[in-house]
Amino acid sequence: RACRRVVAVSTADATHMRSLFGISDVPDVPTGVDVDYFAPPPTAEPVSDLVFVGSMDWLPNIDAVRYFCSEILPLIRRLLARCSLTIAGRRPPAEIRALAERDPLIRVTGTVADIRPYLWGSAVSVAPLRIGGGTRLKIYESMAAGVPVVSTSVGADGLAYKDGADIRVADDPGAFAMACVELVQDASRRRAMAAAARDMVATRFSWDRVA
Image (tube, helix red, strand yellow):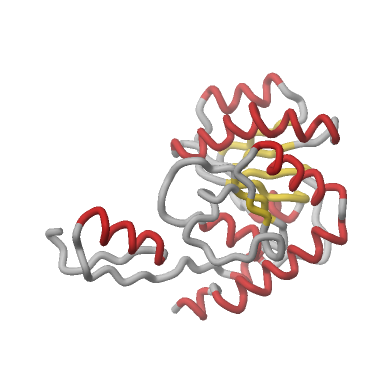
């Protein structure tokens, strides 16, 4: 209220700020991504079936990984027993590092010099967030990297998308698990969704377009 203007990163956040704080001058500037930087190479070294990307010192990401590993991954493994997961992000706490110690198919990287190979080398990027505001730039980065995304509605909040075309959105653990299984198993479906998502991001949310 002490500022003349507040800039939000999505229309949804701008609406929340007007409602919660009684301020009116709240323009929104959409999240942008460097689509050229994330453009996938012709070939990539395999990393894992699933990847979660995000700073692991942030509570919503910690909660998301905890939720995914306890509620969703076991359902996936009923159909894909050897399904692997990479958790790529800085400063993972002990409870996240312990996931890899207990499960040989889970990899926790900690800080990495370049996140792109972890996206390029994975079949599906997951964003199972349940709390938090703002917008998840990592979803647009995954799309720009040519990786299909499965997200909760909270994870995709404030982003532009067409569920089923350029992303899969599911809040129920079973539905989330099945979306992951279908994409991991079906290469043609992965390619179609990845192409639609990358085209959408390049057309509407490249840095050139946003600027």
